[in-house]
Amino acid sequence: MGTTEHAKQPVPAEAGSGAGKRLPILKTYKLYIGGKFPRTESGRYFTARAPNGTALANLCLSSRKDFREAVVAARAAVEKWSNATAYLRGQILYRIAEMLEGRRAQFVSELVAQGSTETDATAEVDASIDRLVYYAGWTDKFQQIFSCVNPVSTSHFNFSVCEPTGVVGIVAPEADGLLGLVSNLAPAIAGGNTCIVLASNTRPLCAVTLAEVLHAADVPGGVVNILTGTRDELSAQFASHMDVNAVILCSSDAAEIQATQIKAADNLKRTIVRQSSDWSAPEHQSPYLILDTQEIKTTWHPIGS
Image (cartoon, rainbow, N blue to C red; front, side, top):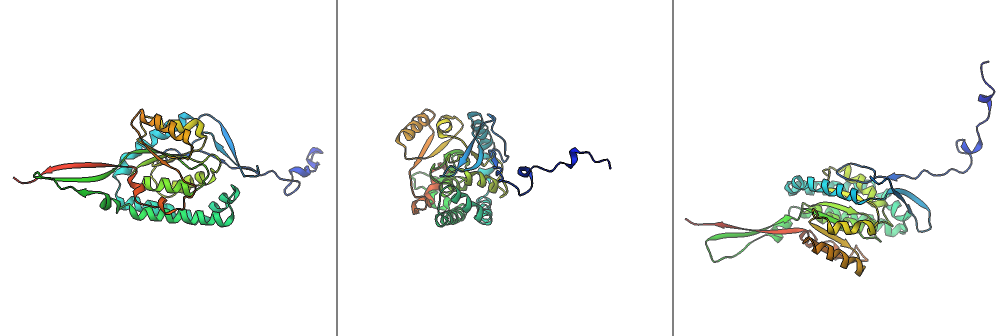
């Protein structure tokens, strides 16, 4: 009684629970800027796909304005992060490793979805975790290795110490989903720099998931900012922006390297080019990679009466 004929109509099979073929809902990832997850101001996105063409996720297509916002956030974080104790930076890097370990299965599955074998994906995630622990251990040691007291013939103390460069732009390896990103990011932040990262366009899933890890791992907002998008649109901004102090370009493309170096030369920006097809190689785990984004400050101090 009181029930209408319309209410008695059966639910269509394709809308019913478990009935018919269900279309998966792709996750839409945002950017990571200043410790927050904003959408791109351009409103654009692209779809990350598996090698067989299967859609995996939707990601923001960052604009030049997004990049400028990331630079502002990174610059605002420089003073606090560069003045943080080496012990604190080491603890935070170790915490990133802990949380990456806790989400190990997710990172492995994302690498597999993007074309890696299960064995290779597992090895890459494990190496990334170990690399973070490695650089966590170096945060309070590299100063002793690279700083020095210089002999002079006058009545002065003369000593040189390392200081962070400041804001570092990192154009991550295009063909590497996680280990290449970690291998370039970890030494930069271990040395007290803040970073803007352009993730791989073809293998971006681990980078955007890493942003979630960083957000929950006590990394201060602005220390690491992660953008997704295309090199064609954004890599030139890394080299030309006047408030970026150094750029790390992971590329073996001669034209891209030359274009970056020319644009960086206009504003006297340090350019570090890293060409590699194997980020697990020993040369990508070294305190000298911390030194790449350090400035050497020399001080003279008079002694005697």
